[in-house]
Image 1 (cartoon, rainbow, N blue to C red):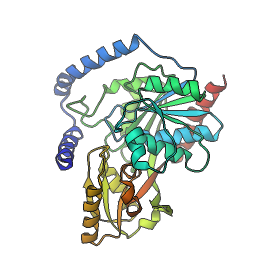
Image 2: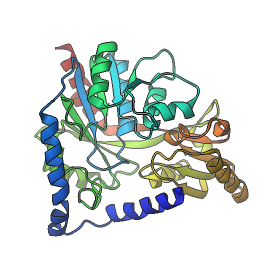
Image 3: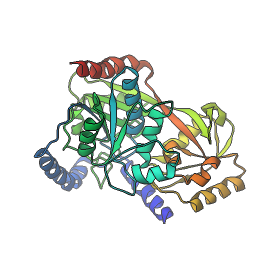
Image 4: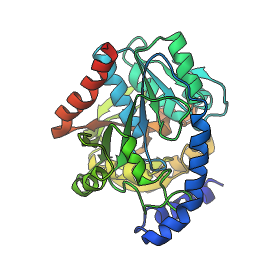
Length: 365
């Protein structure tokens, strides 16, 4: 069944991220989605929830693969480092239960994924792996999770991951994240393209981040975004960099993968980006397998992948950190994963001044 879903996702992705449709065609196809979005936004605006904290939304106009989760991890970590009490709120996508919950530390990653969702587990693990909990993570309806987090944890800042289309929670600041490889796909709205909202919605942003491995498309992306952004809003580039390779309880530098023969698998919105990162590490890809986003792996799935790795002469079976949260516990010592960090490079000072310092100054008011 997953092969059918993966094939469908592949076909849909090629359509969504192909050459842009002609403007009249794209406009006509987008009319139903625009109408539905307008109704939803008007209804959400009738009952807006405010919470006693600075609410920062990390949003993306494109369905999946923009880099919102890595950026959320980075932002929450930076704020915690400068003493700002921070909470992350997440929708808990892919989980099997729908209750409001606070993510807890557990060695049962497979069980945690089913209760909290893979991305929420990933965020919690990355932010709280080196000692006592410093950034709580809540999952559930976002307005409800934010309200509960403020009542229990009393944070200065609530970061809402994937917040753009959730209008019931009042946000004080919105940060929009784009995948530089294909920032808006074919330029059409769902279901005819990957955009959740028209590109003009970028005007809500107070900061814009482009994530990617390469930077050659950055200048043209900035030119387009500046048409919609308010004056003075920064657009920065965050390069994705492989940080570590993890196997069991052992951490290696990403360079460990150089010249290693690898079979890689990924169940993400844009798996090809992960495969490119492995090549950047110098890994020799003996096979790649794409699964649907948030796919819940079974022991049989991993056994088939392990057999493929053995038959191809691969040294390692490797996945993304998010995928690892969904690998059955019995197989986790036989599967490695790569952690990814964001590097702002020459834009680091802009990020510090116009984002981190701006948030800290608003908290202190």
